[in-house]
Image (cartoon, rainbow, N blue to C red; front, side, top):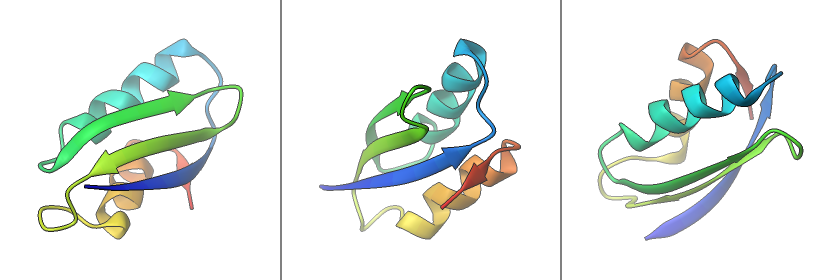
Length: 68
């Protein structure tokens, strides 16, 4: 397992946090996603053999948020 931090822009409420968390944990290989509205980021624990960081960022962007 690896852990990465994804900076996220465009979150404004708890609903955004729930939405992003749901999108991330739905990906194969993601064990845990902790999204913080206050910090504007997600800490994601994932299996790099099943999903890579670029796919995590893309999933957040496809949900309508800025991610880096």
